[in-house]
Length: 382
Ligand code: FAD
Ligand code: 5PR
Image 1: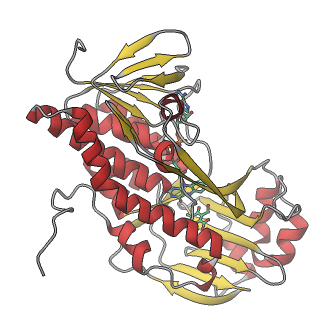
Image 2: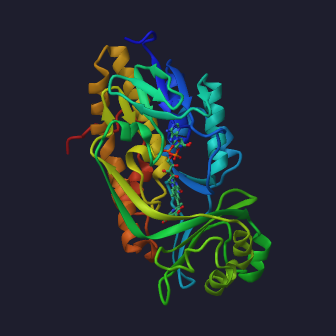
Image 3: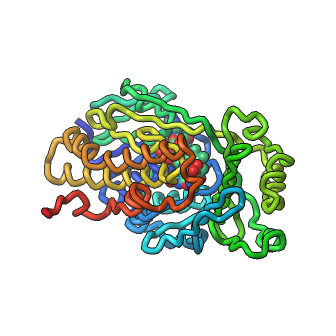
């Protein structure tokens, strides 16, 4: 068997991989993270996190750093043709907005402080159910636990031949980080609370939407949605004239976005037949890439990273069979992730978010889930 009983090899240094690595290291494992890229950094713009992932960040000690450059907007507002549909204050729901680079940096700091070994320029080509990882340079490594956190195109997953289904939705989005420009926006629309998240929808005569999300005092995350079939709406760099004609009150920030190349992402969902194979467990987009509607892709990635670390650690301490424990982990944790995935795809397919008042039912259930509560799966008699 392995030379060290508590060795974990992790493929991918994104939100999922760094969270799993930090949690495992803090629980006594020797952990290596392999990142294909030359540098560890996050692509993309802004992100919203809810209680489910914020609880995990508390437990791995990343919260103080994260809070230094993130915010909780006063309300989540939804507009249709610039008419307010709802202003939800989300009382009792913990949530935070931030930039993706800042979240990634906070996780990287936590990982390093916990003794995780991070190897850049290290491409994983596959893994076996027995826990042997292979690398692009021809070398291999063996571990008690292998984590495939290598994103939607996961080499670990594909090497194991796990069957999957992909579904595409008709819409997609281009995302930007731009300066806040609060004074200029206030001059254009004085009655607007520009610290709110504002989801600006237009369905008629043309489907175009801007999701406006302040990420901190200086940075604004804007996501521009259009159907993939709309050539002008999905063009990058953005068609400034088109977007400002529909959203004139956002002209100053749209102008900044037009100066950035950007990339249009079509919404899609990936569902796997199973998330584990022997000593290998898949987490994050490798296991359950989802549409962004509920803003839970990274949240569920961190949630599952934490619960996996707890389960694997408990199994080893109890002398239980690890592959059996990993299957049990999937059985317990998958339903709430499936819920987020299904609800996000339903919103993406139906555009029902345009009606506002979205924080009910599954949206709240997934947001409030607490993966660090040991009693979360207990069934109470009526
Ligand atoms: P990734 O972030 O893809 O990380 C995978 C890492 O593995 C990368 O660093 C990659 O370089 C590395 N890698 C890949 N292959 C290999 C290999 N063979 N060997 C070694 N390393 C490898 N989620 C939210 O929670 N809130 C939001 O507001 C939100 N908004 C979103 C908006 C859009 C438009 C999209 C598309 C997604 C959004 N998400 C959001 C989802 C979120 O971005 C993803 O779910 C999350 O980044 C997944 O993290 P991950 O670590 O699993 O994968
Ligand atoms: N919420 C967030 C988001 O980034 C998007 C959506 C919802 C935070 C788009 O990227 O509905 O598509 C969405």
